[in-house]
Image (cartoon, rainbow, N blue to C red):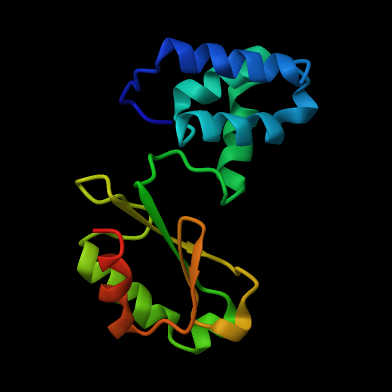
Length: 160
């Protein structure tokens, strides 16, 4: 867990406590609670995980284990425009790695990082289920198909 203390807003903490209550503080509802928590805070820093553990009366290590196991959950803040490159077999074979390299170059970030201005974060996905459109890039909920390295700048320009 991070040694940097994240300052949480009281209203968000109260909302998280209410979410836990709405699931009857049931430890078997951990994944549902974490989904809601991530929608409240945008990510799941150690401080949020500690609140969830306290409210559900489970060890923080169990919460951390779930957060780190599932790729949907993030312990670092995402950018305003989270970019996900599909690295499933069809996308990979059709050049997703070159597309990823171009995003890394244009944004000056590595996978898992957020740009200094907070506008973009970059991640990879295992498969988005749009193999016929490979290689696929998602920006937030918007899907781009048949993306080539030359198309990266055009995608980024939509969000500038």
